Amino acid sequence: YVRFHLISPLIQQSAENIVLFDTFVNILSHNLGEPAYEADVAQLEYKLVAGEHGLVIRVKGFNHKLPLLFQLIIDYLSDFSFTPAVFEMITEQLKKTYFNILIKPETLAKDVRLLILEHSRWSMIDKYQTLMNGLSIESLSSFVKAFKSQLFVEGLVQGNFTS
Image 1: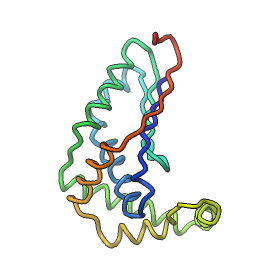
Image 2: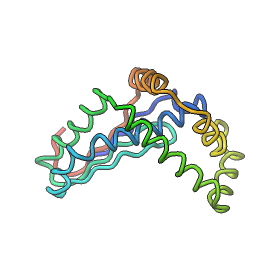
Image 3: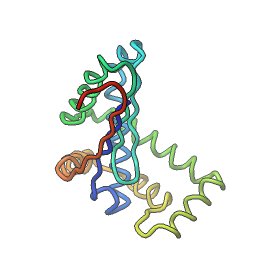
C-alpha cells in the first residue's frame, strides 16, 4: 500500500484554482485509463483523489510491480498534456457533478456548514459559477505548471518494502 499526498498552497487561493485542480485531476485520471488497464488486470489498484489541499495518489497490490504503476502515474503527472476535446468533455462532466451536488439538500447543507466552520473554504456555488463562466485551456496549462512548481509531498508506504 503506497499513498502520497502532493500538497500545494495554490489550490485554496481561489474558487477558480479549485475548479482548475478538479479539472486537472479528472483529465489525469482519464489519461491514465488506458495505460493503467493492464495493472488493473494484474490486481493492482490505484486511485487519484482531488483533496482539499492537494492530490492524493493511492496504489495498492502486489509489491513487485507496484513501483511500475506508481512510476506510470508520476510520468503522466510530470508530462501532463490534454486535447481540447478531452478538456471540453471533463468540464462538461464537472458541471453536471457540481450541479448534482447543488440540487441535493443534504450535500448543500454540508457544504454550507463547512463554509461556516472552515476559514478558507470556497462554496460549491462559487465553484459552479466559476465553471459556468468558462475556463480556458491556457488557464489550465498555467495552473498545472504552477501547481507542479509549488509542491510539498507526504508519503506512506506499508507492506514488504525496503526503505
